Length: 176
Image 1: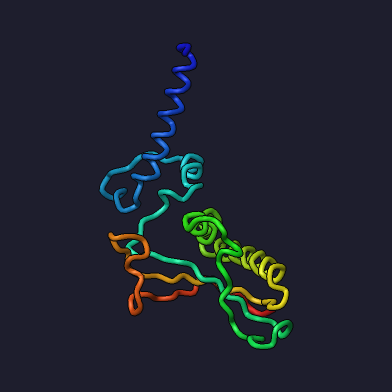
Image 2: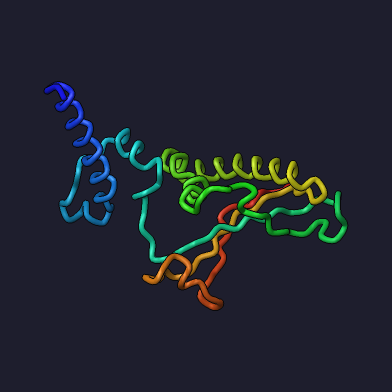
C-alpha cells in the first residue's frame, strides 16, 4: 500500500471514529457539565441516518397503525377503526420502522410542525398502499400509535406484559 493511500485510509478511519463518537457521546445532559464534542450538523446528520445513536429511552415500544374504514367493501367493519398489518407498510426490521415513524429530520428542522407534516405525507402513503393491497377493506383515515412498556434488561420485548403497556396516539388524520 502506498504512503498516500495509507494516509487517505487512516483519514477515513479517523473520520468514521470521530463521527460515531460525536453522535454516540453527545447526550444533551452532558453539555451543561462542560463535556462537549464539536458536532457540525452535516456530520451529525450523516451518522444519524441509520438511527443507531439517536436516543436512549427507558421505555420500549412497538408501533400500531389503524385505518378508519370507508362505507365501501366488506360490510362487517364499515366506518370503524381497524388495526392495519404493520408489515404491509414497514416490512423491514424494527429499527428501520422506528426511523421511518419518528421522522427525525423534519422534526429537527421544523419541530412538531415538521413532524406532523411528515406524518401527514406518511399517512397518505400508508392509506394508498393499504387500499391497493386490501381493496375489499378500504380506509379513509390513518392513525399512528405507539405501544410502550418499561425496558427490560432481559430483552426488548421481555417486559411487555398486560398492565405494563400503554398505548399512545402519535398522529391521526382529520376528516376533510
